[in-house]
Image 1 (cartoon, rainbow, N blue to C red):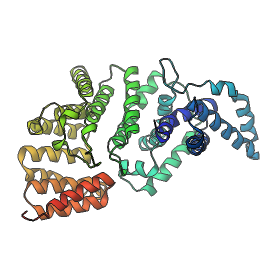
Image 2 (image 1 turned 180 degrees about the vertical axis):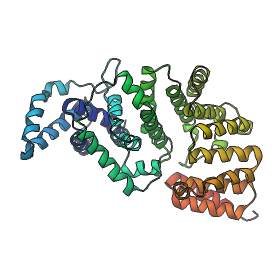
Image 3 (image 1 turned 60 degrees about the vertical axis):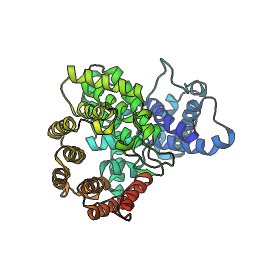
Image 4 (image 1 turned 90 degrees about the vertical axis):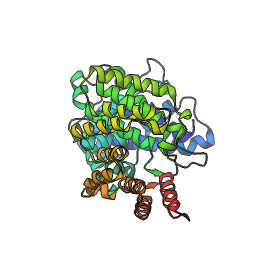
Length: 413
């Protein structure tokens, strides 16, 4: 594993370990960031330690204690920390790989970030920052808000955690129930950022998608009878199964209809389909189950032209009723276009024109361009593709959108 990917994986575990020992969120996070910076500087030259997690926990703990000791105004905290400090021998013995029975504080960190003193939006934003390792800009794009709006929101969340004196215990049964919606939403957003990176040269951030799946499996093992947990895990597996075919040899984006279905992960499709089928048969219907059922309909047929768009349209209509969301409307419009014609899809899409979040988002313009192209309005489609290309910060998506626009300018069209 590359050093950057290893650090991405270990960061939430290091933060969880420090929180369990010292209990102050913002101070622990600062210490972890310093330890990650030290590793990024030293490991390429000196090699990765035999026990990288232990190395990071040791360095972060020392940085945290040093910082406390350097602040004369914090003498009382210094005494507390010194009393709780763990000997270096114990830190060196920390596990650096996941084995059965090993303690992984990542899930506990997830529930701490979803503390009830925080608003739902702040819970999700803080968890994306601490557990998912996303930048403030990436989190802002996930929420469809400016970065300048998101940065103080994350800062306030840290302050509220500190003011509440939040500790790092194993969640009780009631806490699982109270925080589960926020936890699932967080995992959903982390997966989405991993599956389609909001910015940068790569279409995927595989380490994020993989971590979201791993954490969701952990939640599913703890709550095996919860249909929405199973639905979310199914959705991730069915979506991630298509990942090998989404990128061409040159790194270009390959649309779903043009993908080589023989490259899809059949094992993940089988597992995801079984999960959602079982969940829908025995649990109250929820949005993650519906999205997983839609994903299953996309991957089941051997050819794109055999897709059951009518059933997908019905499922999106139900999803829009129980969990209204502009992105649901966007996808519903595509399903309507595939069943009732592009004009009908464009009419539904027009209902989003008064949504300021969507008007700024590249996907609205990309979908409108696609539907206009289906309707034969090439000039309008080309303009929408060009607008979408200017607004996306993903390089593969920008290249794909510009190629679609250029194709509509080709001679003879």
